[in-house]
Length: 119
Image 1 (cartoon, helix red, strand yellow):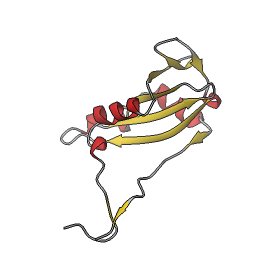
Image 2: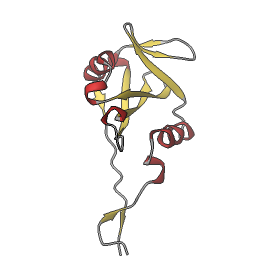
Image 3: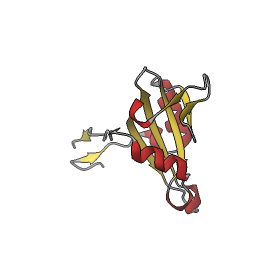
């Protein structure tokens, strides 16, 4: 039985792959990577600077048995309307280029699932 104020479980947040799939369904289709020049698209090889993107949301995933499996998914929209995702490890295994880029992004949002189950 669920109790008052308990947050609903969101099935697509159980794994990184299911979350990436959900973001693609929601229109965030581009796969981004960070290079020495900036944030790059795989499909068109466009380069974006930190002030040209917004992080719409982000999700962290923890490895059950191995801390090296920790990852973070950034949901990104560029100033020219390109929507996509960027995946990185977090913690000791994070990519320093990604970390430096993200720190320079001006707009970072975190949307929290506020739907509650009332018994």
